[in-house]
Length: 234
Image 1 (cartoon, rainbow, N blue to C red):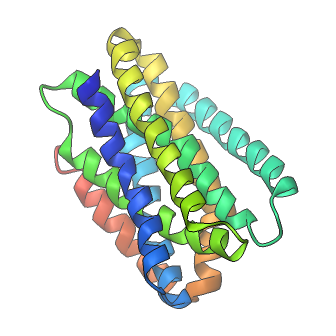
Image 2 (cartoon, rainbow, N blue to C red; image 1 turned 120 degrees about the horizontal axis):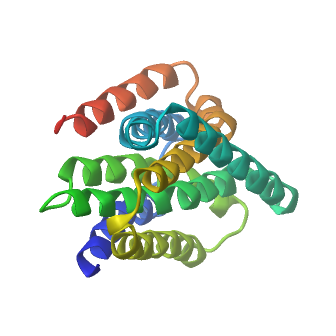
């Protein structure tokens, strides 16, 4: 359980690193848009290869589709609630942070599931989570700072999300060792739904607004890199 928790925490730690990089360095807005687009591509690949395909294999097509829809509605509802309460200019950042939280828990559980299935954790999955989370921390941090958040508060937010991910991995390892394929598939499909909805409504519009047309290339490069990493063990 402890080992799974530490691997889950490691996977989410790049959220903190991304936030720290945005705080320490004045990253040009256009470059940040390209990084965000690259991160969006990695997240689409993660949703496809790490989550949706395994969910389909575990639970079948109808259940996978249902839980993807549940994840989408959950993110949409939570994001609308946050948008009505977030200060002007902060919504995009809070949306990305909310997406990181809602997909970070199932991502961490997926890491735990890989440890349950084999003698060691899936290195490709850990790297995939690390690469997909780094741009989320980088992309959202400037918006929080412009809205008046202190650097300590921003880092504390991402630390909290990372700790929740580590806890989810530990609990997932302890609880899901004997879970049915339907349960595992539901967890993975729910995460895919939250990721895809966050990308379409928050992350990609933000990326294009900052990075303009080259964001399309960055997106595909991110997708291709993570697709390669997540299929290494296939």
